[in-house]
Length: 381
Image (cartoon, rainbow, N blue to C red; front, side):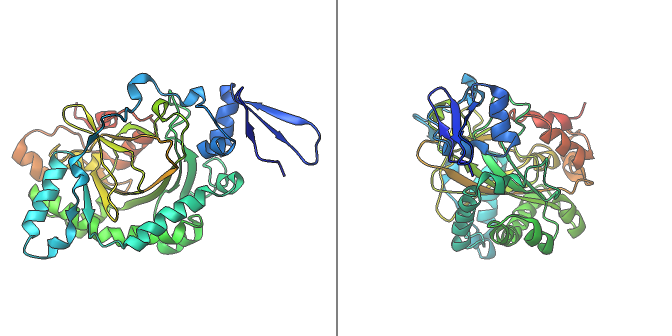
């Protein structure tokens, strides 16, 4: 057994072995060594922090234009959550209107009384911390390169081998929900049961929101089409370790989500920012018991741009390690996506072409985060 790594001022890590008298030095000034330690060996950003990190290594230092200033930060109007319990009463139209307006303008909103218990939301945060507290070798079994299962992926950043600067985030992705049995067999402990409950208890809310937005553009989806557009379901647990110099780093870079709707649980630390129409960034502050909903690229394409897939990003902090748990809902890979005929007929020539979702997904995951550039792949020529 190795003793804990020690982070030294020269950005080298030394460790000693009880059975070997020599001391090995890992030089983190060498970017290949750093990349191998963090990404390929699965130690993650947390592994660096656990080593006693006191400064940000150069590969994590973001260009000035990508950094997130926190002084005088704006607070987003989405801080006022929408009460979904009123959808079943005389205030249905009023609540539906709030959802539609948020989808048409910001692309983000928060909801309460959504059908997911607050106790489950707290368990989700706890289980995320428990997973990332595991020893590196216990998490590394879920690395893409060594894990035979296609249902779980563990890693750091988004596309670290293509990024100019690595994002300050570790994650475990329960990539595809197939059925309860496989999820409970293959999703990692201690996440599997609470993640599955979160997914299943959120779906009625998601379908209600999708139906409201579709009805607003004059479309009523048949069950088969709804299942096709919502057939891919993924649950992530994101971990943003405490950062010694958060002004130099980002947790997640500028991007929009690729699917239909995203459901996000934030913890109390905060750090989620959305881009406004005027180009400024505003924080969506965490609200206890609330879930954040945002529109994905697929919904923007289907609605002919009426609904906005919101560009967003996440800052880091030195206040503590932050967790978030998103559910991504998206079409089946074989599903065709394109502007809905009813919307095109009313509004004119389609701005987006029809394509298979698997092609859009491959392009999305093959590029580093770069705002809403992923949408260019679907634009009509």
